[in-house]
Length: 273
Image 1 (cartoon, one colour):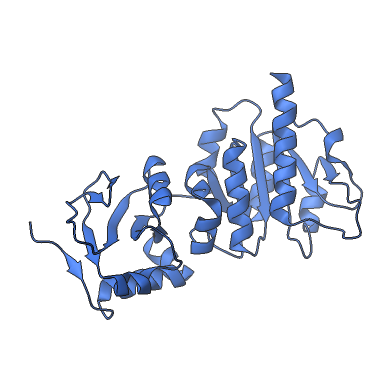
Image 2 (cartoon, rainbow, N blue to C red):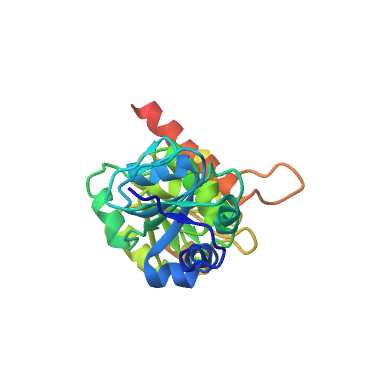
């Protein structure tokens, strides 16, 4: 079989990958995104994502169709070789094992996580409102996967789930954790309809987080670091919880705060078991 090799920096497919890396509007329009690195691609495939094409750096050894530098890939898609110079242009970050994939996005409507929650007793849900930084959301998804959170719901987001920095920070968590994107009003109605207790993390009018029972169906709701949660979430809450701040600063990074609260729920649920 003749090997498919790209050596031109002006190749249209190379430019397409670069555009997908840089433009969230194009990712939404085409329903495609880019994954870099063997570990991330493996997570992607294991979680049921459809790979459209894989690009690998040209080396002396040939790569048969469906295989990229030792990574076994299943599916009907091409594997394209590129020169190191072309790969450097395509890659968003360094040290990605010379491997890039174009992947089809999944459905992230609220109904997509509803199917998961219907099969779980006392689900644990994490809700993030208007998160700005992709790295923070990626870190939250990484922790959510480690804590076996049943779903993450991103409300009124200021970044998209397939931002390259988010994918990198999540270490594949974005592929593994059932995740929905919606507005806050829709999410509040969804949680209340299913009898999921809403705990909002806020400093005002709140109780220490470890004094609240998280063994029941629970949604832990976090806001932005700069302004916190909006009033609609504070009004909708069943309880307000806080992480005690004993130092001079009055807030933690949102991903750190989310990790503390997630693992408190894990601790309580393990005690019950």
